[in-house]
Image 1 (tube, rainbow, N blue to C red):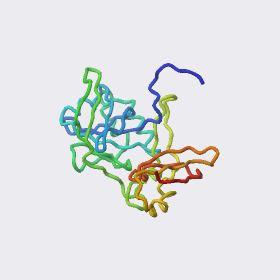
Image 2 (image 1 turned 30 degrees about the vertical axis):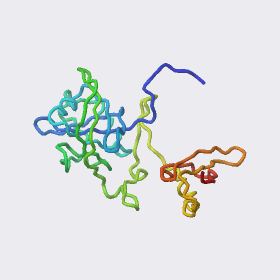
Image 3 (image 1 turned 60 degrees about the horizontal axis):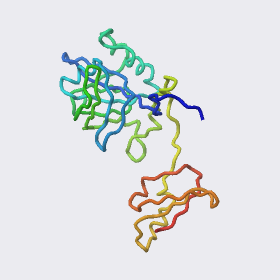
Image 4 (image 1 turned 180 degrees about the vertical axis):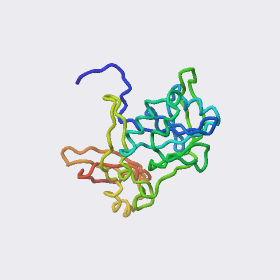
Length: 234
């Protein structure tokens, strides 16, 4: 295997559009990739020194939209052009803008899903930026991107991710997993021994891997389609 020096190559990285208002109430957006889930209702974002950073000092509220194939060009544009240099930046995106329901921040309705957020903490704050942890106070989803169960459908959204190696964007593909729960639910239903955990065997007998899963967590584990699955209670 070839070795590389340390680089920011955690892949894939999200393409997040952070929306804020300035002191005049004018909307702004920036593109961020160094971010992720921090807790059940919190996210973390690595912030540099941007117009957005200044706007966040006003009230600490913002929105986070998830970029898509359809919004890719404009999403890239707001990541490389600063409102400091182009006052008509947002006008050039062509995005439709409205005020968020629960925070003082803009919602770009061209995106299928948007988080409404409020800063909770800042870490390592300096002249060059900081890490922010924010509470998710509301989630907005365009109804046409909902699945049959009423929850957001990632396949319908045609989300894109950032490739930090080649500095490009990649569109997410089709669903590629199925739940172990679906494979062993019948066995669990007839679990007369009331076992606390289950051994799940993945693959053919001669090559199978064995993992032990608490029964209460069985719904959280997935395997690829076509993988042979068997189980026994322990």
